[in-house]
Image (cartoon, rainbow, N blue to C red; front, side):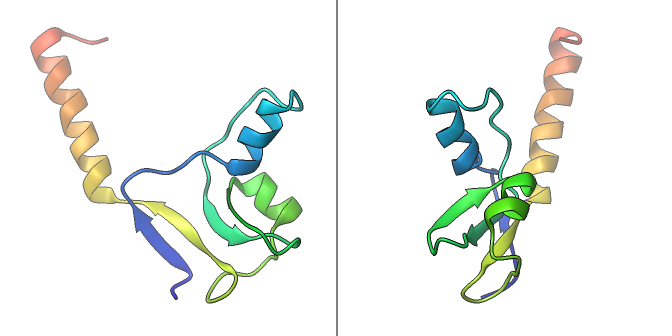
Length: 90
């Protein structure tokens, strides 16, 4: 397994969602790592949660850094530009 994987969409942080659902935090951040936590469970985690709860390594058995596909990003920018040209700025 690679230390990095390209995805079409970055998921939300599982731990942020858990915190929000339990009234502990208000913000749900984007996940940057799909990794193993010190407890042995796996989660999609934002950088702060990865630092606090992750095992601190990436690779086979530890996790992967999530990277947004540049193809998807380029497509999204093109859509936004096309919309702006046809309908004016948002």
